[in-house]
Length: 426
Image (cartoon, rainbow, N blue to C red; front, side):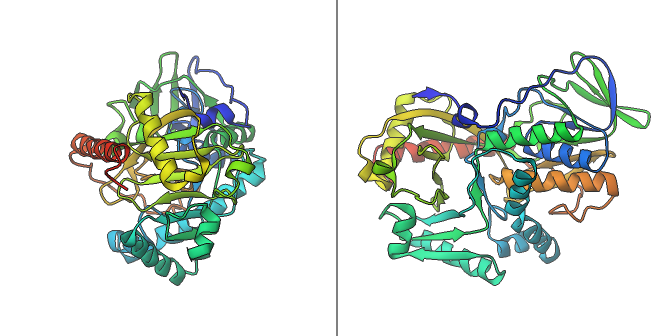
């Protein structure tokens, strides 16, 4: 088993090629961060006729946009009526309505620009791993059904047939959703944005941001960019002290382990419709198969830095729990991504300073939310209308105790996984 990202290695979209910034230039809008949010912003700005430059510190993708599970889910992490309680009725309904349509926005871009990301559109599955989890699924199902969402609560044989395991008593199927190879989707967005006229620069970290008259000046090692508006699209991969986004989330990790391709005569009954799935555990596990038949397992917590033998033991434990019919599985690779969490599990859209837009806190829903937010940012910048954004742009208080929260989460995740490996937890 190697420490390498499956999605990058198997992306049918070729690597996106671009040059670092060299010299000074100007644009209407400068976007910092070449992930899904930044590229969606750039693509939609270019479509609206604005000049835009994207500055990415590494390659595309290099962060969570290419390292996540690849679930194209509707909504936020928490159920729709809980969102209304947290945000208030008006903002909650706005967020629910816009993000309910998130998968359709993603699939529309895939179709419009011919992005080859091995997408599936057969839904996703939320799995009730025990009685408490099944009760939570029933509550979510009732809320979503009241909103008219195309959801089904599966149990018995219907549940076993769609999953290939007897370990799950019920599963919530959301037919709006699907899966992608996230690295391929991100590369496709970059290709589409460049084709629409966006100037994309890789290997170009922004070293500082300062006001220069009526514009913002972005300093890099090889040149400067002057722009009237700036979008901070760095989210969970915000590192620089000058970047205000780092104060508005606390960091969590998610690791995955992928098998070598499994032929259908061995694994054809496991997720036969290729839905992506995740369970209701407090430290959740994710399950999916890719286009080549690999079984991909994931969970909250860091995998990088842990012995490969430990990760292999964990993967064997989860696989034997859910899919004992596979026998021994040969694991191909493992990788870790980073998630931006917020205490209330909702995103933040704010202006750190006049002319600067920022977002944080996707809480594991980055593919759809990043796509939607990027489109909304573009319309807000060009047309002065925030109606396409899931929430209004408003002041936000920094998250308190960020480092303590991150450390506590990771410590709890590690203990939980150790218990799974030792067969203490089921």
